[in-house]
Image 1 (cartoon, rainbow over the protein chains, first blue to last red):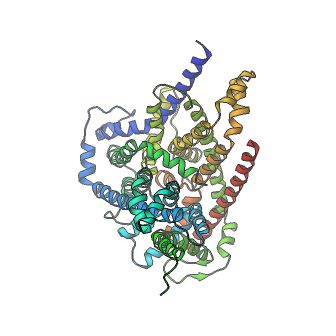
Image 2 (cartoon, rainbow over the protein chains, first blue to last red):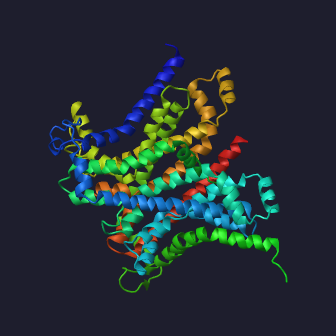
Image 3 (cartoon, rainbow over the protein chains, first blue to last red):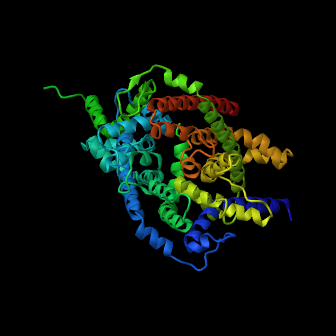
Length: 276
Length: 295
């Protein structure tokens, strides 16, 4: 074997071992979710479901508030995406195409908010919500996530690259800045919109700390908080089959969104990292 | 009648375009940031009136043995995480940075944890680490090793949480390295090759120096991420056994929402914030230095 081929084989083996480490928890999750309770507590442990049963899924969807959590997560993530795209594109357009005093300083201040760790804001944000009686409400769950520096940054980059000729022509035709934004800039921005939408959908779908702090009833819980409550409610006698079925329900939508928008998601992650 | 000038009109438009975003950032980021700073000089349990105590919260932290225990554990967690995450991500990126069959599927496997919630990941790994029914101990049994109580033995609990964090974020950091690697010019590698450099020398003397900026960036992002770890601790160990997995994010949460020492929690938040800012400054400096070397 030539050294060239052996090097490639080595690379393949390394990558394969890594991929197994990455994927194994998902395989176990799916396997366990399809087991009978008796099989999940067999000793020594068994990992291949036999007989196959959907009982865990029926129970998780029928006898627990899982569907309610799922609905809450969808509503919160959906509104977050809409808010992020609208506020981010409007502000990004202003920073890229409109001239006003203090523009650079303001943009820098917006970027600086990305440096603030979530813990710094957590307590005062909770106090704010508590003082106006908004704990355990949808508005408290949704409002803080409706805008963010990343979206503004992303759209600013996109709109900076718009050709000026387009803008000049529009100006001569008497277009207002709003028309330029809504009728000329936004229709060209689909890749940026898709990137931000996928990114924010997944971020919102997966976020835990804020929903944990600001909700306290099943009616308002999102999937991650609901799963955590579900797990801790079982304490000593965890029904792993049932818990894995519920986890599968939470994981699959995110994986589907990722698979559909893989290209946009990867670009978003790279842009997020090289933000300076 | 004097019409407003064009410049004034444009500024007025800019105001309305910026209003929604700035309102959101102001109310939900800037205002709480100031609030947190203020609270860090007060004592408050959310019920009575807040009481001004000056630097007492910060002094309390400095004199609290638990604070130093938490910091030491956080340091261990972050350190072990960085070593594993950065070296594995770099190694995998190098392996991925060539034309191989079936790479698409492998890459997707590496991304599955990145798009999965940490809560779901924590639940999956609780099952794997389960001392009696878990897959890991079953695997150990097949090679004749005794079961380990991964999450309830204070020697193993924190390293186990590190493994989960590595699993979750490896794909992301690998991607960042891959982007950096693809910017390494082929010509330089070929020139080194012609000069008789072997693969290891080419990596050490050509690729790694060019990869410097990516290395600094990944390390920095991974550090910030590791310092903010919360979900796994909350779900898998609740800070135990014997507080051995109580790291800074979880301790802050306990101070704020279990014992309602809002002032102390805010002081801790600011200590964390300033620490991360200082680390970022070091990163900025390091990156500048590395970029200058390239010239």
